[in-house]
Amino acid sequence: MTAVAHEDVLAAAGRIGGHVLRTPVLEVAPGLTFKLELLQHSGSFKVRGAFNRMLAAGEMPPGGVVAASGGNHGLAVAHAARALGVRAEIFVPEVTSTVKVAGLRALGAHITQTGAVYAEAAEAAAKRAAETGALQVHAYDQPEVIAGQGTTGLELLEQTGGVDTVLVAVGGGGFAAGITVGTSAGGSGPRVVAVEPERIPTLNAALRAGEPVPVQVSGVGADALGATTIGGLAFEILSGPRVESVLVSDDAIVAARRTLWERHRLAAEHAGAAAYAALLSGVHRPEPGERVAVVVCGSNTDPATLTG
Image (cartoon, rainbow, N blue to C red; front, side, top):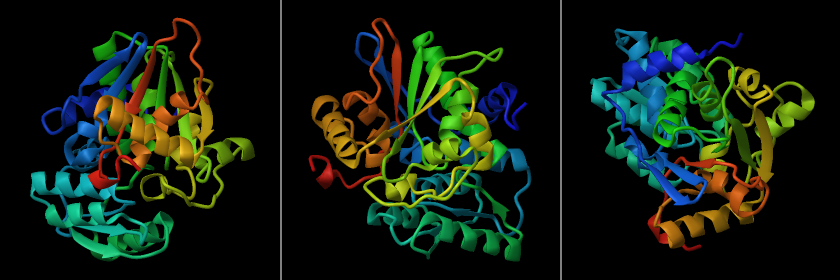
């Protein structure tokens, strides 16, 4: 039995329901649906896990909350903290986009930019939380965070009436793990295709090694999918038989992002387009009649770059 159960996702849905948006689905072709999580508060699904972690903790410590992030998780924690009247301190690596840093400032977060990659920012955040007693809100490797992200899967099944396959991007793995649990009931559910950039194969490398292992981080998805090692809880969930791991090239991600904008007027960041890249590039080829859902998961990007 994993550390996060379907019942935990149901509890999270009840807990965060008044704080997050029920994002729409869009049927773009027969058998193909987009779940538009890029329209969520703070521009990504991350706010679901942030609210669930903070609300499940009960009374906040005087030090508030501390989080490390490539950008989207920090924005989510800052949004949730502001909504709940809590101080937020966010650590981000140097690769974090200026758009996301500006968003953090606008939300009133205290920002420390440190380290070349997410893992180094996470180490600094953990040290700060230990020093101040603040509540640490991990980007992907906490049960409450995974359960919160899993509410996306609950909504998707309710809105579509059921699908055969869900394509979802993977960084640290918390979102894909949450969707895997959230779309399960009685031990069954749709296949989950976990999509990663070829240049950040965090889950793929772990599955091949049989355990989480560090990988190099680079490429267009680095600011949002830049975890160097898959989360332990996520790995436990994503090692199951319902999950398929696939890799997509940076060129495919760029093309998918451009297509989302030009064909559907969806302003996704590169990480938000990664799942669609697997479908558009042919890495995932649906069987005849297969009902496919693609989670478009983030919109924190510079609009001026959408066609490039």
